[in-house]
Each structure stands twice: as structure tokens, then as C-alpha cells.
Amino acid sequence: MRKSKNIMRYKAGKEDEEEDEDVMLLFPYTRFTTVLHGRFRVDSKLYTGTLEILNTSIPTHQLLANSFTALTCPTNGSSISASVGTALGFSISSVENKLVTIGCDSYGYIQSGYNGETYTTGCLTRCNGHTRKITDGTCSGIGCCQVDVPRAMKNVSIHADYFRNSTTDWGNCTASFVVKDGSYNFSTKDLSNFEYEKLPLVLDWTVGENNSRRIAIATN
Image (tube, rainbow, N blue to C red; front, top):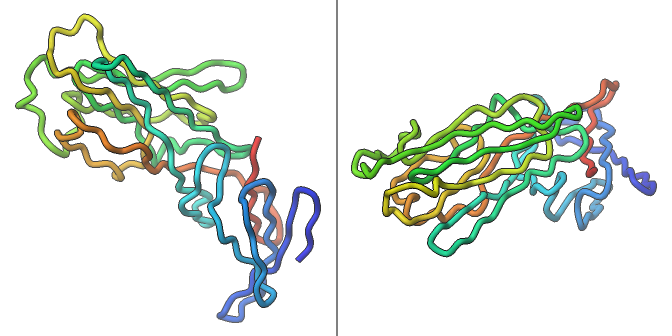
């Protein structure tokens, strides 16, 4: 194993006796590592930007990571935005993710800067007092709405809000989040008690061409 100030290289041996691969990791990305019998093993959680990494797919050049939920509650006046801080070389997958907003007479949106420009997209959900028409598993604009995530979005902020002139008396919170498509299944119970603080999303990453496979995990 060879270690420099910011880069650690190691040989990742395989039990099937294939040729070892030279893998490069950029630091800081984790808090604790160990070496056992000549093999390198990461024991603690991995992060990219502000996101905790759950899984890595080398063939698809993607990471599965946990992201926070934005939440606004008119009953107590609280409002919490969420940020998705992506590291260098990463962007939020426009194919694998959706922006979802939960609530009645609510809206959610994301903002991101790209090439000196600011981009915003979102969706709104209206109930118009007809909460009985809301069904589990349906996210079509009544109690739950969703929209595609634009390409190449990085370091986004997520916001949840509600319409102040609403005449409904639902009085519950609005939640908005970016999530891997299919990982969240809407339930009418979430309108009165949304319990998800974190949900998984997919990041795309770019890897430079090289004779050996490399993983690059870095922070801004």
C-alpha cells in the first residue's frame, strides 16, 4: 500500500485469482481504515460531499447515497430546507431519481447552479378538501406529486412550502425530497405524519480512462 497526503493506492486482490487491480481513493472520504493480510478494507461510513454513501456500482458509474428531506410545518411555523452537496465529478442522476413532494395545498422545488446559471424545478399538490380521494401508492398531484430531475444538477437545495391562502384545515407538514425512483411508496399516512428524515438517491460520477479500474471519491 502506498500513501501520500491526499491519495492512497492499494492492491484489491480477488478470490477467483483474477489479476489484482490498482484502485485509487482520494481523501478525505472516510474516518477509519485498516489493512489486514495485505488487503485494504474500509470499515466506517463513506461520504461524498454531504451525502453518506450506501452502495457503489462500478459498471454503471453510480453511487447510492442518503439524502435529507426538506420539511415545512405551518402548525408550528418550522421550515427546514435540505441540501444535496455533491463532490467533484458527481451529479444527481436525472434518469434514476424523482423530486417528490408530500402534502395538501403544498409545493416543493429544487435549485441548482450550473455554468453560472441558476435552475429551478418543482411540482405542486392540491387536495381541495377532498382527502378521501387520495389513494396509497398514487403520486399524481393529489396529496403527492413528483417531477423529473434535470440533467447535470449538482449541489442542489431542496425546499418545501405551502399556499398561505389555502382554505383547507389539514394543518400538517409539507415534505419534499429527491429520491431514487421506486424507493418511496406514497402512503396517505404520510400526510399526517411523515417519518422519513433521509431517503436514498442515485449519483452519477465520471471516471477518467485508465488501464486499471479506478474509484475516485473526493470532496469539494
